[in-house]
Length: 49
Image 1 (cartoon, rainbow, N blue to C red):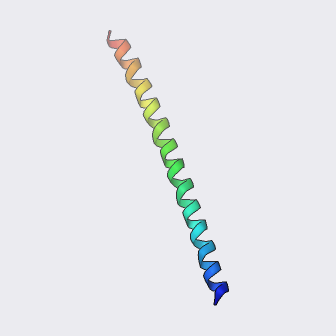
Image 2: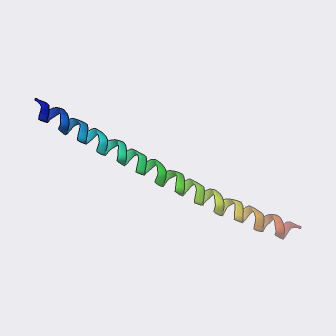
Image 3: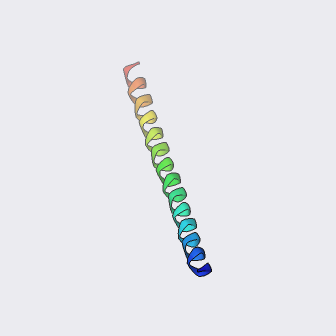
């Protein structure tokens, strides 16, 4: 019985890690997209002026 609990805990830790990694990756993607969007807006803004 103790073995099942440890396996469940291991799976849970793995899922938590995966979620953390996925969230960080998503944040990085959003950040880079935001940065490139900001850069595009700056270029357009400079072109208008």
